[in-house]
Structure formats: structure tokens, C-alpha cells
Amino acid sequence: MLDDAKKSLLTIQELYFGEAGGWCLATPADWLVREGRRIGDAAKLLDGLVEKLLTVGAPVDRVRFTYRTINPQLFGHTVMWVRGQGTKATTVGHYIEQSDDYIGSPIQTVQKSGVTVRRVLNDLTAADHSVFHSMKDAGVADYLAIPMIFSDGQINVMTIGTYREGGFSETDILKLEALVEHMASIVETMAMRSVTRSLLNTYLGRRTGDRVLSGKVKRGDGEMLDAVVWFSDLRDFTPLTETLPPKEMLAMLNMYFETVDNAVSSHGGEILRFIGDAMLIVFPTNEFKSVANACRAAIFASIDAFNSMATVNLMRRRHKEPEIRFGVGLHVGEVVYGNVGGRDRLDFTVMGPAVNRTARLEGLTKTLGHSLLISKDLVDQADISVVDLGLHAMKGVAEPQPVFALNDMNDPYNGKPTASEA
Figure 1 (tube, rainbow, N blue to C red):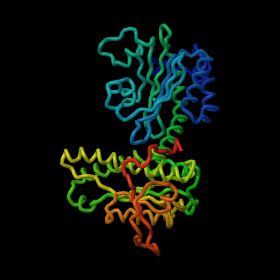
Figure 2: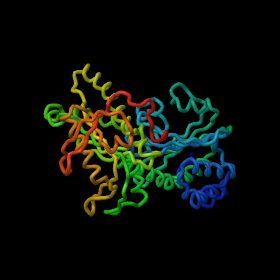
Figure 3: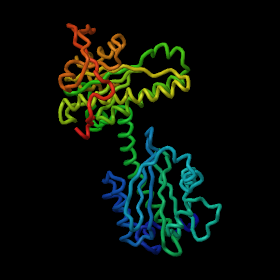
Figure 4: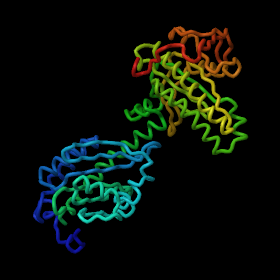
């Protein structure tokens, strides 16, 4: 790599237009500024950039960059191009930070130092990191890991390998470092979009997150929505909070939420809100081929949730931990799906009589001896085998309402429609 004295002798003209020798940096740099910044897809961005680099004769045969995101499951997004193999985009979990592939790697070194790492691969030893050996086995002669620094100081990395005998020249490295500086602002914008969507989906849910991103952010924005509404909460939560240590309480809550979420999401529902130990969940009927399919998807989601929790509780009993017990109320009807709150703090939620009746149904599970209770409206739509539990008073509802439980909690139907199958 050129030392500072030699770098200072290179003018912009020499660096960008090839007067220092070699390929012309101006063409791919200009493409990034004019066209690349408008591309919202990381794989397409890398495809376009590599095409320009190859056109001007840049010695690149493998290019990869990773940008981090804020997500409970993902460390970041990776895009890689390999000559003759094309471009592939993947996601990387947080496990990578504890893996041998990352610890001590050139990528970790760059993220810690903010300085380019260059390794010619013709004289590797056992002390060199496995990444270098993998690159050599793939035919790479020279390898670069270049810092891609965002405006907030976050250091991401672009790696570039060449098969060319003799590797990169000193001016090649300077040009590629300058190119990565152009890339940084574009990838940062892409990363911010990804972070925004990830955070909205994580904290608001996919449907609500999409609404916010589409501009439905004003207080009072809303619509009428036909949906199956699910309300559930834990049994004996108050005494448990008095006896369990906070860490165990949080672990129990997360197990409960995760178990229900897995069942609900696999059948096309979505958790709209967590309310302490309670969950408000919706199955919008317009996302199923019929209201009946939406109703039955919600029923089978509840069956799956209870069955999965039975397995969880078996293990909890073995570890002498308190069982997780919960009730579910299901109803179908029209709700107001809208944006409510103060001027500076808003929340998307569903409101209306259907939500109230669902919550009241769930409340009755505590006294009627059934963990799942269903309204007559849902029974009529789903055409399921049920047990009639009679009329019951509900707070806020003028007349006593018919309440039903499943006749066979294990498998009332042979088929279990989901959002994708319905």
C-alpha cells in the first residue's frame, strides 16, 4: 500500500482517470453517484457496480460487503459476487460474532481498527486466519478488507479478492478504497431503510409497520377491518410476579409469547399488541379466501398453541418450574384499525365492540373450565363441532351472549388452513 508521502502525490485526476496507471475509477464512481444511489436492492447495487468495474478492467474476482442491522434475530445482511457464479444475498445471525469464522478474521480486525487489511496469499502459514486459507483455496491471489464507514462511525467492511497473478497494485488499492468511500453513503441509506423496516416490524408487527412506512402516521388515520380477533392472557400472573425472580418471570413471559407467536404466525395471524401478560391478535379476513377460512385458521392456531405449550410445560415440570397456563377468546367481526394517542406518542390498535367481546370471552375462561372460548358469530362462520355453554353476561354488553367451546380440542378438522393455503 502507498505510504502517506506517495498518496499526497496522486491528484484526483490521476486517481480517478487512470493517469496514475491502470483502470479508470471515474466510470464506476460516476455510476454510483448517478444511478447506484437510486437502487434500493443490495444485490442489484453490487451487480451494477461489478459490471462497471469489469468494463474498465478492474482486477476484481470476488466482492462482498456486509451491513449490520438492528434486529433480534439478525446481525446483518451480506451480499457477495463471485466471477462466474453471480450475486447472492444472505442474512447473518448474531451467532456469527461468536464463531471462529469471525473471531480474529480480517473483517473483525477492520471493524476494530478502521484500517484496510491486505494479505497476499502466496505465503500463508498455519498462523493465518482460516478466511485467508479459504480464499487461497478458491483461487484468490490477493485479498483486501476495506472499511466502509457510516456517518455515525459504524464500521462495516467490503472485501475484494483478485485471481490476477501478482495481485493488486498500490494504485489499485487506493482506487478501491476511494470506491468504497463512495459506496458507504449508499449502503448506509440502504441499511437505514432496513433498520427502519426491521424495527417497525419487530415492535409494531408487519402489517402495522407497512402502514407506517406507507405514510399512515397521522393521529386519526384508520380503516374498518373485518377480522378474527384473538385475546389471551396468562393465568395466575399476579401471584407469579410476587414469587418469581424478575429474570425467571421475563423468561416465562418470553416463552409464552414465543409459543403463541409461532402458532399464530404459521396460520396467518399477527400479534398486534402485548398488554402486560395479554396478547391482542388479528387474522384479517381479507387475507384468506373466505371468512370461514380465517376463523378456522385462528382456531387451529389456538389448538397448536395449547399443544405446544403442553410440551413446554412437560419440560418445566421436570425442572420444577411453574407451568404456563393461559386462556384464549376468539370472535369475528368488524373492528376499527387505526392510529390513536397523544400528539407526540401514537399507537396502532384495533377497537370496537368486537374487541370488547373477545376480551370478555377470554375472561370467562377463568370460570367456565375451558381454556378456549368462541363466540356464536365465529361458530356460525367456521362450521365447527362445539359444545354450547349457554348464555353468559359480559361486562359492557347489554344482553347475555352465547358462549361455545370446542367439542374436540385436539383435532376438530383433518385439514388446517393457513393464510397461504386458504
